[in-house]
Amino acid sequence: MNYTKTFTSWLVSTPKKTRLTRLEKVLVGLVAGGGVIATLAVMWPSQEDLQIHASSPARATRMNTATQVAPAMQVATVVAPAAPVNTVDAGTTEVAGKRPLIAVQDDEPVAEDEIEEPGDGPTDYESVALKDLDRGDVESAFTNLRKHLYRHEPTAEVLLQIGRLGRQLKELAVAEQALLDAGALDPSDAEIPVELGRIYLDSGALQDARWQARQAIRLDKNNTAAWNLAGRVAMAESEWQRAEQAFRQAAGLVPTDAMVHNNLGLLYIHMGRGAAAVDSLETSVALFDAEVPDFVYNNLGLAYELNKQIEDAREAYHLALAANPDYAKARVNMERVNKMEVTQTQTQTQTATKATDADDVPTDDDGDFEFEDS
Image (cartoon, rainbow, N blue to C red; front, side, top):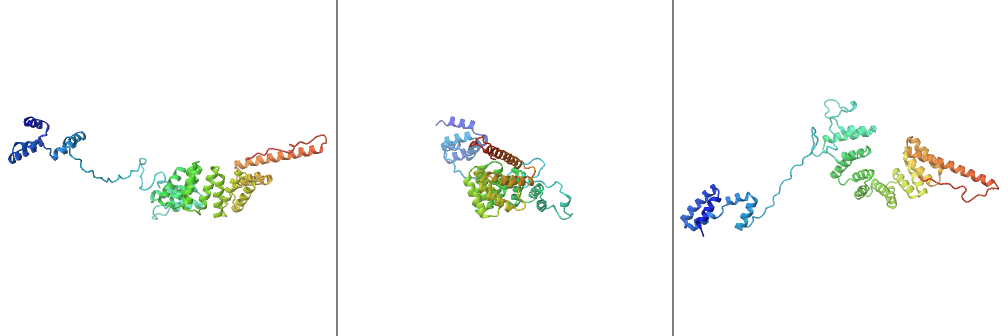
């Protein structure tokens, strides 16, 4: 072994601090046993060398390969997740657990009759929202519930109410997020997927609506609204038999639910079953009593028309227009029925004239006319 060459190479490649450490080893080696031991002491890598070389991945790899040192056992290190960062617009304050899409800051003015007396503390926006609902002011109630949410921890009940009002106001993005958050807080409430399903049905997302209806039924098999939603989704998908089963299930749970009977009657109109449609829609009108919606009268008119009860159909359309003079569908249906009656009268007159004229021979087509289906 060429000790001179080895020692020279070592001097060039080794840092000064390390050389001093190695020289101490040389002295010890000389005292202990001579030149060979001293040389080995110089060339053997210290822990400090390994740390220096490990600072460079490439150099560490070369060091491990050259010295054939077994890699140390890897120890799994659990790193605590970083705290979530909420991104909001400049100038706003985000409250933990509340979404800026749903919550509304409460710095907006309120009506004078809603301002509490000095010393009573902040405005109770949840109570104000209830008063809004009593007055029928859905939009104000929606805003005040969101203000309440800005100050307080969210609850499933408040979020569900925000979702319902948002759907009525066509604030579908806010309504959907509120209901998703409500479902996370209370996964056992069947009313939450029912409301979500209604949103998806209104927006045409039938697959999502169907899934939410099934989820609601799984949570509560006796929930009439869940079965009614399932029927509406099936009807939108033209799955008539499945829709009928769902509506019948809902009607069996609550026989006095006027809206379920309306939906069942409308289904029978689509199926071409005039008599069944008339029966269901007459039941719906009777259950609504003095507050029959305009669309129920319109649907009843369609059922009468399908069942060839033209005079009754015209009366039903008249009632629909009396409830809502701007109801365009009822007006179109009324005009069609009136034209049908004129055509029918003219045809009957022509048939009577031909029957009294000996020179005319009636044909098989006399008295026929086209029925314009709605």
